[in-house]
Image (tube, rainbow over all chains, first blue to last red; front, side, top):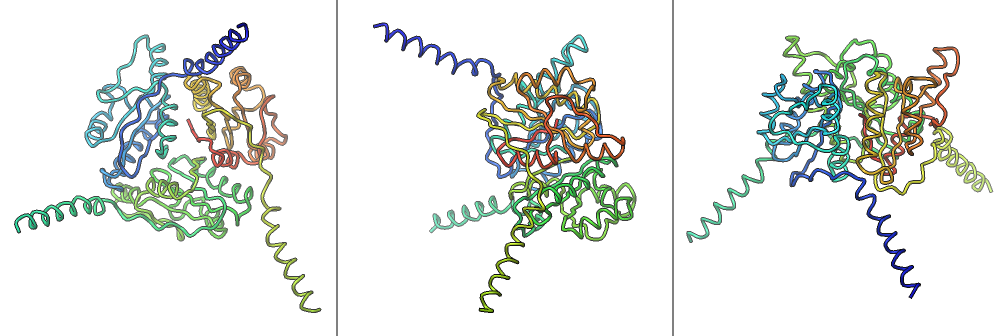
Length: 152
Length: 152
Length: 152
């Protein structure tokens, strides 16, 4: 009888050990449905405006290189790179045109929170930009799912 | 009879759908024959002269680390990084010596075309430098063939 | 009889050819024992202090994102990035706290040797920092063992 209770307690403890990591980790953003032959995640973590332009150039070049229907591209920004995706920045027309052409854009929620505490208000990202809990985590998630990482 | 013609037309349309992507995509540069245990593609997409020196240092260090016969290295430049490979730049002697030691160098044709439209003439790359249609595409192509990407 | 000697000589030469690469290559640093689901090597090869802070932010963010027990992180520095790990630099308290939380830090011996020849003395790295013969080689070694490379 006592033995049964010990087993129960043991099971409960084991359950806790197994579930704690699940609670600790943040929810991942969903993986995009993709059937393209090539899958590329472009990383932007630099604030340098030339780098930000280069990332957009590379997105366009890769669509021409593979043919747009053969490549899935997601641009992921974190750290100072998130400025590329803020509302009303100079790259907005190019980004809108790339989104229309099927390129996805994702900004890092951690970075936006950091920006907020410095600015005193939450900065707005452009329309059509997805938010992932952690930009670095998003890049690693896509890479683990077979996406190649390129940091221009 | 009509049914047969419909099938033919359907086959023709299907054929078009399948072949269009092939025409849209650019021709890839050939993959190098390699039997080395380690295969590394070194990316240079920065214009910063210190970064350009660092890439050459890393190429030399990796040859010493693995033994030159055990590692295949290709340095691929795109964007401002292509300056490293232009004719008569300060790194020419080191690059010539690395080429003599088996390191390959590849410059991006897209970038050279961009430079041309700014300069009014096509810039010359050093002797011994290969040209790929898209530098970013070249890096992804080598990576898909088992090469590790390192961006120093 | 002569034939036997020729065979012996041939065997000796073959043995030399096979062993030379082994002597030429440097010894690799040992791979860490790891049972975590996610394994990430964070590269720092920039001297820019903002980049060095960003790498430490990303290490912390990834631990929160996955849960610290679910991710193994090694920060590897080479080139100007090694400054992050030198004794008595401004990031020392954060690095000590990350080390206490299970993050590994590794500096490049090649770079330290370079620094020595410029400074006239070997620079000291912080306590708890490992040394690898080549930082670039360390990153490639971890990557070949299934670690994902991220360069913030």
